[in-house]
Image 1 (tube, rainbow, N blue to C red):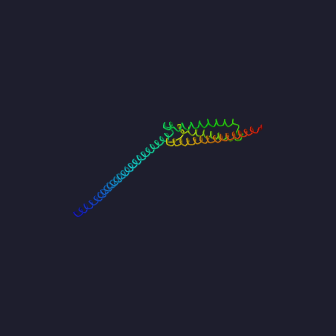
Image 2: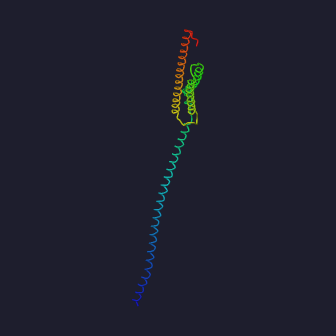
Length: 215
């Protein structure tokens, strides 16, 4: 009986011990899994934090670049718009007066010479027509110079710096002055021809008078 009792106790203790051991093992596995899950979560949280930080930096960087770009564009636009405005220094440039005076003198001298040559009777119709062609070309070029000058000294017409406007005005002055010089040379040559023809006619008349030629 004693042996039977001992055997029963051993068997019972083994039967009870087996489920407890398995149960303890299951709890340990769960705990270990939770630890692993927590570590994964922490790692994921860290990764997300780094991603957010990187996005913030990029976003701020893009915003800064955009702001700088917009600022530069605004400055550039303001600078270009400023080139539309004619400064007082340009408007008071002495060459402007010189150009206008030369153009006015050109028109006055051509009209005066043209009238004299027509009344002189020393030029035939073809010669007078050629003279008018020269005069008309000079006047046409003169008007183009004044149109170009008007664009340069008028606001909101051309985008040019002061230096560029002054250089352009100098170019117009040189061209207009050369036109006036050419007109004067042309008129001098025509006047010389008229004088020579007058002298020739006078000489012929003198010869007629000497010899009593009436025709």
